[in-house]
Length: 620
Image (cartoon, rainbow, N blue to C red):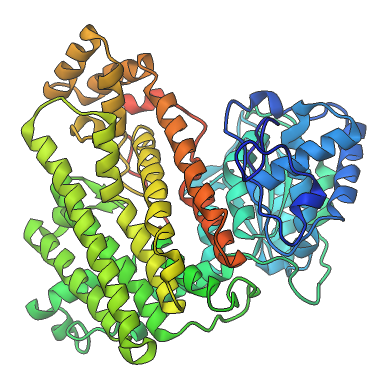
């Protein structure tokens, strides 16, 4: 759920707020969200139970007339929220609250149709009594002792009796991983509006049936909620004959299964198989390490894009599948998607060496574990493996299709090397001289090609490509640039799914856009201090604190967020005219997920003044 003000909600620039009838017409394009801004004034919860329940009833009636054939996007949900508030004559400060209610009733029937053992109950830490709580934390969140001092135990005990999985870890990124892994199909969640804005929207956009109970306040300490709202869903089961809403979870699961269940079938080992002596032999070592690196870690976004793009232009059976359905995807297409991940993992192995990064996916980088030479060799091996996986599909896909896919992948490799080479050349020169345009050019070369190759491969394996040839590189350029800027901001907060150490890129003197914008905006004194910080030595935490202060003074974080919004808008504008509808929907989904906000912070928390602790990730 993303909450925005009411100035503009159309996919076309300058469009006004869409009505329900407009957004549900067969030919209407999904509505674009407005430019993001501070939303704290839009997250009020009605003070009385009577008003909350009245607005809940209004939202239920409102949703009855909505088209439920596919998940709403964020812009549509905002438009619905504004329209409902206007209809019931309530102020804009309740926008976030009514958006939660609309989402609830959009998905409630489908959530209630899930068996209890396919549901997840997600509870927040702040429901516990802060004083004297005996519970400890494990890698999943709070491990409740069921002492009876707070309501967490009441919900947890009953939910587990019914068969629910229960997680006490509000807004945890592990939630979507649990869904994608196939353990549960829907979420009953309790959270404040701030958490719902940043976390729950991701599962809703993906098409996960969810029902959220808003906390009355967001102060994160012994807060309250309307308990009857939980019990209204917790114990109910009302089956439906078939799913009402399309979503991407079946395709995400298909992508996940390629690595978790089908890997040996799709990428059979040659040397690292058989007796243990064979597996441990020097001849098998490169294959064993490479296969392990390829099969584990990461969000597997790029192979998902390939599968979803193929599905979008070949009947959309995956998009329309139910959670329990097996999606029929040709072996050659699945191998092509794995090839995309092989190229991505190869680039990460080499990139970590070139940048001397310490951690990847919560573990030491390959070159720290096995040595630089072996890490280089593993990257090279995965490049060769990726091309072999594609070429094996010639009989099934046709030689011309395979040639086009291989050509696209080769171009992506060259662009990536050009971008990485430019970055290393700039670092080697040792000069503090970088313009924002230079940084953006490097970003376009380093990050966009992987998205371009993934999207092109899926579309080409699904059919003719001519009408998409110009759109694909332009769309992926904006997507990749926005993604890299977002990654720069995450570097200041640490990144549990990636490198884990806050501020690593800044102190390594990498040509980031944040640095370029600071250099451009800095006065003489600030520039001199920047050069001293970046070329000097001493305590890293202290230097990071000084660097952050200059970035704040120069408005760098705000400018970076504005550029992410511009990338988002330009990518969406290119998607607006794409046919078929399933492909257009996929492009919007890519924007919503690849450029999803991870946090509302525009500058790092004070915790970045020292390296963040290294936390293990589960199912990364």
